[in-house]
Amino acid sequence: MMRYFNTRVIENRSLGGGYFVLRLGGCEPLAGSRPGQFVMLRGDWGRDPLLPRPLSLLSVAHEGRADLLARVVGKGTALMERSPPGSRISVLGPLGNSLPVPSADVTDLLVAGGVGLPPLFMQAESAARLGLASGSEMLYGGRTSRDLVLLGEMRALGIAIHLATEDGSLGRRGRVTDELEARIEHWRAAAPTRCLRIMACGPSEMLWAVGRIAQTDGIECYLSLEQHMACGIGVCLGCAVAAQTRPYLYVCKDGPVFPAAEVMARATAAASSQRQGGAR
Amino acid sequence: MTPSLDSREEEAPALRVTCGGIEFSNPVLTASGTFGYGQEFDGLLSLRGLGGLVTKGISPQPRFGNPPPRICETAAGMLNSIGLENVGVEAFAREKLPFLRSCGTRVLVNFFGTTFDEYVDCGSRLAALDGVDGLEMNVSCPNIKAGGIEFGRDPTVLGDLVKACRAVIRKPLWVKLTPNTSDIVALARACADNGADAVSIINTITGMAIDVRTRRPRIATVFGGLSGPAIKPVALRMVYQVHRAKIPIPICGIGGIQDGTDAIEFLLAGASCVQVGTQSFVDPASAERIIREIEDFCRTQGVTDVCEFIGGLRWEP
Image (cartoon, rainbow over all chains, first blue to last red):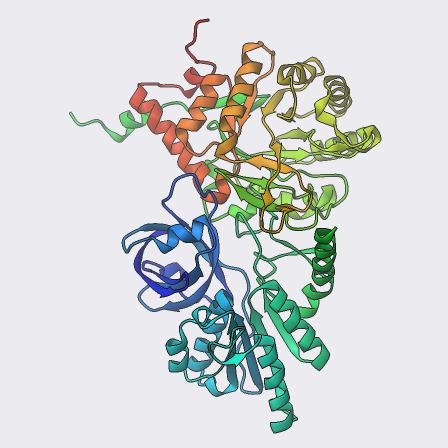
């Protein structure tokens, strides 16, 4: 059940490249959170920035400990990155829906782009806990090797990892979607009857590309979306995304995880018309 | 002798206020568009403890709102262009009102239309519902027949609209004024002259923001409504202008209230009660905290009744 509470940072670990893991204590209300769920987080930093920041949960452990992965992109994340242990922080959560539960009958291709890692990391953790680590593989991409973080932690979960960087500094040179196509091809050849499922989180361009691949190959696919939001609880209605079955769905309360077909068509159409508008 | 619990209770300042025909247990309400239909905040704060709540703006038919991006953060504030999305009168009555009836606080329903007839229709249907304590008219809606200019910008149009709604609405009728005007007093007077019971001052201020990297507006409709602490000085000024003009209906002050001190400023400027808006996004339990802070401030000031603050600004020209 969602709760609003104040707690403190107990550890703030820099991972380089602007990435950091914020470890919070006193997060007992987050016990039972599921992969894909998020929290609204705000430090004790006055009036600017004003709004709390939505962050996906990376890991929720015993003793009320919760880990969040973020990258410095603006004022809010810059302030979080500089929050030393002991800093006060307010938390609203857990919020939103979650990724499908790992299943022995399905191979899950977890596709993460940069700071979109947390829901998929938590999903991998959950698969490992269920003894299903061998049924999932992580496909993780970024611009450079500095965008690929927590690799040691991921390896410790015992799931297969396939990396891609645009500059070729680590793993395959290219996009994570190239790796996705390669893995689908591999599974089609190695185990043609094996049921595949894709779950992805990352930049929107990446998500639409993942969705198109899934559509083409007829693979069940879930996208975890990111959108600006003020409240996280379906009140501000700021996080609308164009949807298939309704004019709009809300990332905070209907998502953040959506079946790809639900959010793909109109969103990609809107993105391409925006690009054309920008070129005029 | 140590004071008994009873005598300490006697010392508790009186927080009860009356505004626009409605009595509230304290002067803090939550503002339309920032508190959903109330139920969303159930469990995050005590709804029963609020002075009242104002629902999301309701139109005769459901509305789906504007394309994204709909919001962006600005310095000490935010811009929104949600597009007045709401469930419509029927679904409101069927799905939202049962909870509101039982939540133990005063309920004002914000409403609007895109034509005079829609306003009258929507207002009269909502006023007929059990559990609705009063109505707040949102007049910052484009008047399609008048080329999309907001109903609330022209005192004559606004006066006619208030009169038409007043004729069919038997419950307290408040009007939420737009600050996007050169003469807030004229707008407030038009409301008072045509039978409104109170004015809510202010709605959001029109603004915009640009993403310099993409050179695109940061919200899809280019312009949006600015809210949050950034607008408090403007809101306070407008409340005071209307108060000073001795417009004969009470004022509900709105704009960037973050704490008890902010709320008291509005009372001193002439508001009889206040609404907490964007702050409910920052801290969902803020309205409850603000009530406590007002109470504490009364104690430290030796004020026994919060009404002492209303219009209490000390200023001699």
